[in-house]
Image (cartoon, rainbow, N blue to C red; front, top):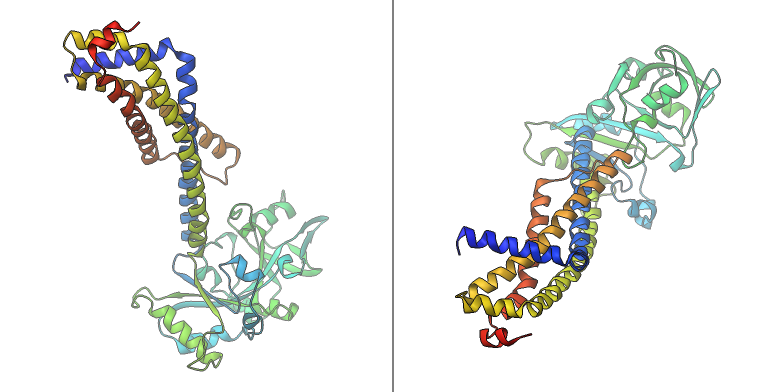
Length: 420
């Protein structure tokens, strides 16, 4: 079939669809719904994947965490087995002991946390201003090296001098600083942290957190020695460490585990009584969530495309019946079966392609609306998914349009000419 023939078939298909606009619109509705759901959800997942990847990068892509209890799985945290609950708590000197017993660890630090999710509320006050539900964390100077997400934008971070002298100094999250000091420089000011005076020595860069969860903006960091003195009840300590880049793959993690087993006197034939996770646990958790979301989207889009495909088949069968005489005339003047089949396949494909294009546009509009209204969900339309939407539409048209097209191609021209 020549290019001119294809062009003429497109014109015929377009004329037929225009002649039955309402019927055509209702037919492609299923295609529009199916493609829209795929494009919009794919755009959301694409944007969130980039967001999660950037978050892991800023969190410290090579950072590992050690703790008495599971950290990466919320279900395990709230439903801990008895053997986990009875584990010995970590001690503040574990980091020093690890430094002495390892050679592949570039950075290692220990920190403790006081927060509402541990049943301990915190509040900050300055000249009548008050901020509640603050997360207070006691750290060492190495903390920002292990977790780069905590980047100081103004002032400085906790130093070894602050830790050695148990100084009452604090580094605030940006949102906390803006609330307490809306019009003045916070550095050097004295605030009240749980009724105790602290000098503000720094302010972190803005970080609102992940999906509405607590971010750096919600933290107040104080020296680990002062935290230990003021909060002896805070026993859930966590170690963070980074391996040397020149170390063999996995050597730092394995060495840290062996060192911790020795420190905690774990027998050789007994399993670890602590947990180790990498900072990419966010990516792992996210992949688990999106896996279910992709399956759900696939089911919804499949139903929509199936409904649309059945509608395409029905309208094409009706079209074949209505144009039986036309088919007979075309065959009488020399049209082959392949010509008739191609004509109706093109008509079905045009119908589904229109639905696909409308679905892509609606999906893009939804993604733009979500990105505008909810900046924390950076929906991004990927060219790959646009191409996939077009391909799905075309595939539906060919698959569901083949039976009517083949039926038209096999009609007897004599019977067609006698049809009224």
